[in-house]
Length: 106
Image 1: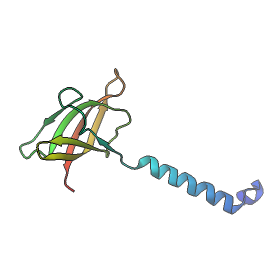
Image 2 (image 1 turned 180 degrees about the horizontal axis):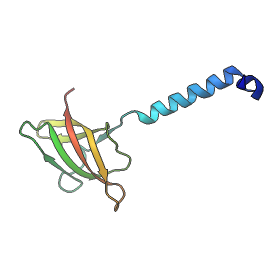
Image 3 (image 1 turned 90 degrees about the vertical axis):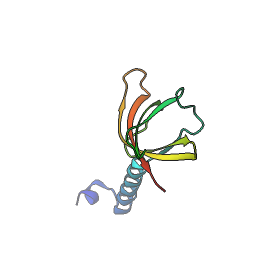
Image 4 (image 1 turned 135 degrees about the vertical axis):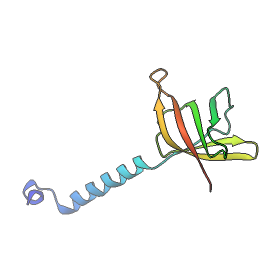
């Protein structure tokens, strides 16, 4: 009744709803950030946390990285992809963060 009484057609409402759902989904997709062109020790710090090298702690600068995102780092055999498990941003500078990463095998 609300749609009819407000003058909004069902098609218009469904178009709006699908747009909102798709926009929300796109915002929640995980992003991949490529650090292979950056210099370890200068542009970022990465420390291995376990013996099998599957987890690490990284400190770097880059805005909008969130849990679930991926980071690609250079290593001796080429590159390795990691997923962000936890991340905390510093208050100053605002784009600096420290994250717990886990290795992703693709």
